[in-house]
Image 1 (cartoon, rainbow, N blue to C red):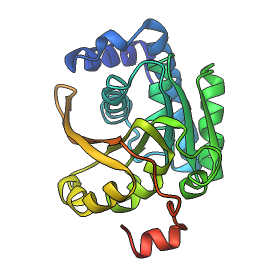
Image 2 (cartoon, one colour):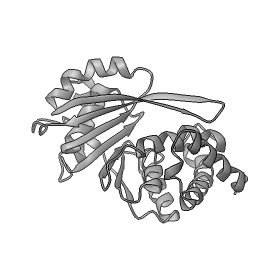
Image 3 (tube, helix red, strand yellow):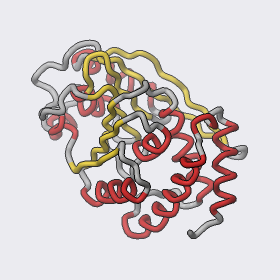
Image 4 (cartoon, rainbow, N blue to C red):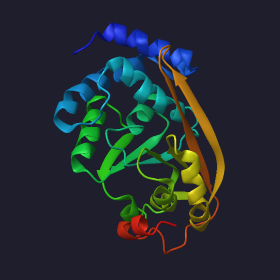
Length: 244
């Protein structure tokens, strides 16, 4: 362990408590987050998984941030995490919400190998990850099969909606963790959201702190009201060249 795990556990508990997330944080979860941090920092030297390398910063920017999403997910949901990268938000959700089944999806095989290795090391039976492109998955047997589809810092909303909404079942939701350009991206994506069978439910502002730093960004929550037309998703070259 390349950091003081006892102090890390205390800091983790403190940050979760100050953001009203402490009820989710069991002793087992603290142990798993501590081990995940060690795995992340070790493997980051090989795979460049995250630019955030300080354990205290990881707590706020990765763990608390993903916990804020985990807190709003419906019980027993099936989730696809599109562009899961280093396992955010999928690994923290798997740690905090044992009732949820998660499929991590990324087109980079090395990242998928990392997520599956971390899940195995942490004995997380409720998550697996696959190497795939979302637009291909949306035309497979997985089409319209998930209660929730999430994405964190993957693409602009006009592109992201066509990657995610075809995977959401009717009555489910797409939840995008977005940054400072969310409002303008959402305005541009309004027509496409409707075409794909979705309707904006809300833009929920997430505001988190570790006592020193403030992290603030929106969750864009879109309800899947109708089936996605068979023409979507298109091949990625078309999606990116001429987004809806």
